[in-house]
Image (tube, rainbow, N blue to C red; front, side, top):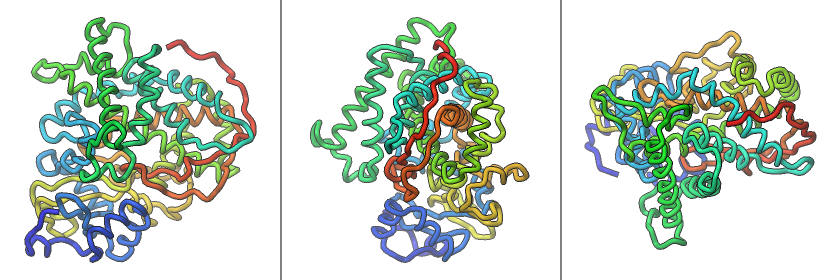
Length: 456
């Protein structure tokens, strides 16, 4: 870590005094208990010593989160805070950009995620869920995380990249789970272990597989540009044609960077969130019955599924109870006063999603899975932040929620299922928090699909 002056140290809130190595180990192995213990001991603001370029000040009071989310692009850099992702997503990813370039690309991407655009993706999401469910075993335990990854990857490749069939699609469907699994290894997030020692070394495998994935993506970008995008509804078709305020198109590398962001960040996080939703739902028999009845009424109809208030509340509560990422962060480029404490520039301030979502003052009985709490409670953006907030709120938030509703409705319309074990722990997969064992389920009964697939 870069040393900081004593005066700057004195401006930082207190935090654990244990060595950086020990705090890093706790952060990697047991992030939720570690954050909860720090919050209980040090309160709404505390400093962690992690192997980052900056001290990390964690905040958990909603008003503090509100102030961080209100920072403009010059005062707080989220892209800089996400530098750890650059080796995996590349330098053109929206997640690692700041300032004017971030705003330029974000504006060009946003129209692809408007509600009307997403409605065109509903049938593809439902078809992908059905195809996967057809292969799930009945009567024997199986881990559902990998099938959920396959569903969300297929959705991304079809609705975002616009691939519908052929050997390149099949190759990517086989390739990217390996890329994601390699990137999910905690050691890969430390530069020390990112050494290419040949095609059989962990980082060497990742680099070669990523390079092959890029070759295929660039091929799809060039093919779309050559053939034109008329009649296409996928995200790639939209961003290929998008122009900035000066009439400039995104470059090939910029488009690839955004496709990688949507593919890597989008499919892994949504698959994991779906697993957590199943984990909490299947512990509550009465709620499971309600969801199954709702799913039977709206099955295979994207419009009806999207309008389901119950499914909306279920998804929201799953994202609250177990956030996929424990914190979001900004690097301060100028001093900031939060709740009466002046924080210096050149530190990382990190709103803690986990702790905000478990504040009893906001969410009574916070460890209980209770979708009905949202019947009377509508949290503010700084009180519910699974997708971050402010200028850096995840561009695919609505897409992810929409997809979760499509997949859950499809699953509960066809399946009677239960947890194979209730001994599910939180494990780290790269920057995400996933259920242990891939969330083992047992399918007790599987019904055939009631409707025919919709042609892509």
